[in-house]
Length: 94
Image (cartoon, rainbow, N blue to C red):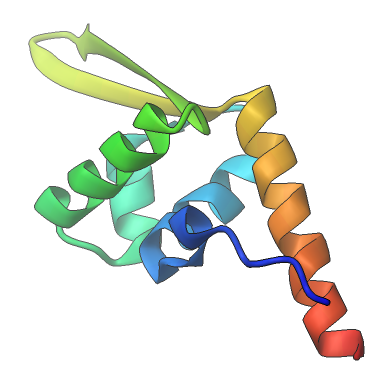
């Protein structure tokens, strides 16, 4: 019997955000937007969903006079991502 894949991480954009953050200490919104090729609005919504689940932390500040949003994966997010990858491997190897 297979474990279900985490529906929160099964979204293409949310999975891309988490994949990027897993390899970085933190990332700015503009970097994530550029790397995922998403719109600012869609990215913002998906970041909110990941943040609400406790998978990432979001820090809002200013760089000069411009708003700066920085995202960082949390320990809970690391575990969720690792569980997702391991579950995916079970599907592939069976």
